[in-house]
Image 1 (cartoon, rainbow, N blue to C red):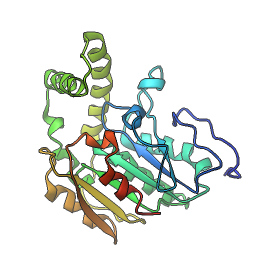
Image 2: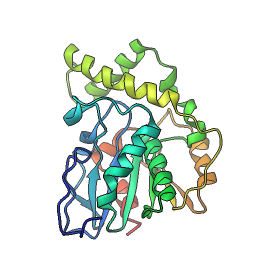
Image 3: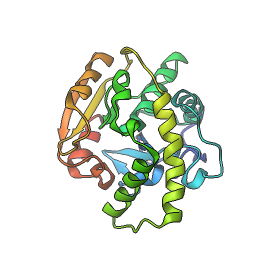
Length: 246
């Protein structure tokens, strides 16, 4: 582990976590098809915890690298990258499918006897043993393309064909990883879990979110105003929840 005074440079973090100035960190995991830019509108810190967006291989600044493969392989590699940064209290935040590699990373930290997050924040993602219910897993490539184009338009971006082709290539590989992921029954986590349900999200069943209660002794399910992708704007209600563990 580092002494805490050095800045750690790693392709996994587009904002190199600082060695000073913040007493804690929150590592943020993006959803399928996305990268660390999903958190570009977030503040530099929340409740004293430095915001550290995680950049998965095979997208954005890591486009030239091979895709991470499976969630299990992603968690294995990320655990190694995290080791120098576990010198202070930290939490994980994972939105949608990003919550699953976050969950797997917690298990790997525990298996290796490494420091554990003080909270795992799960946003808009059914429990791991219900992950196969994700409605996007039943979509065809054409439907995924349309979903991507709609996502871009909703953000005021004209979906040029070259942009959509590049984004779809990432989404399809991430989609394959999500489709291959299987947990058949709950696994007890060694840290509290906070589950966030977006009130206006029509595609996530609250009952599937409630199933997270089987994964830890302390599980807090909260409802946040907004839709599935509103987390990107860092609304006040979300920041309040994320700052509550400090």
